[in-house]
Length: 243
Ligand code: 13P
Image 1 (cartoon, rainbow, N blue to C red):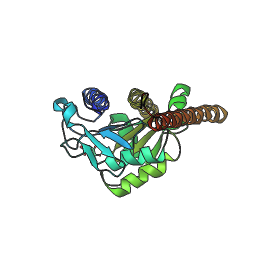
Image 2: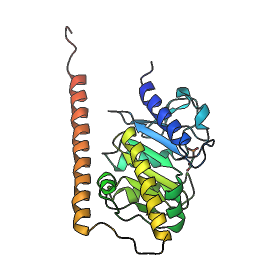
Image 3: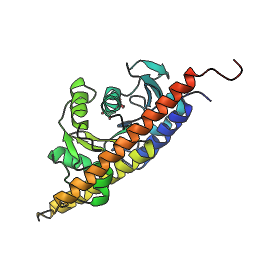
Image 4: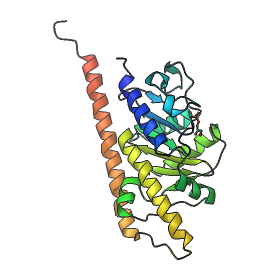
């Protein structure tokens, strides 16, 4: 088994699950992209560009470094690879990124409406707002810069105006759940807005408390990663027994 195969398999499985459940907009298309950081390395595993998920295999998944050089894989990485890199570079707590084209989040994307804090369990997972990343053409530097700027709010879900959504998390399973939570929240918000009646949001003091817990969780994850990196550096410096 290759050095990156475990990460590649995880990315493949989650991508195929997202596709078969319709989170990429169509179940037979190639929209959306998924990536995962390789622990302890300035490298990540990412889905290839323009390839249907149902025929994708482990060998189709790409590995790139932080200079976006291809380390492994014959295929061209997703056109949004720099957007994934922006997430890893600007958010040390992030180790997995999913860019989806999910339906209800996209409804709010064409209405250019962020989702306010509506439910405490969602706010605790996502942060105090599901904000809108301003539109720019797919795959462009402008879009990737817009995403990088928004990530500074330290939340976990974003709606990309007239395009789709972005979820960032500490691992792929958690990020998959964020995609589901985003869709649940977006669907409920759309249905509630459609009634024309006022939508109630969580009280400010509760939101502040929950958002502080989100930041504290991120800080713990950053500390965990830093100490794992220090441990492996120490192991690399120590001579092997018997040498
Ligand atoms: P890729 O096929 O290059 O990943 O692009 C899909 C997409 O969703 C662009 O935003």
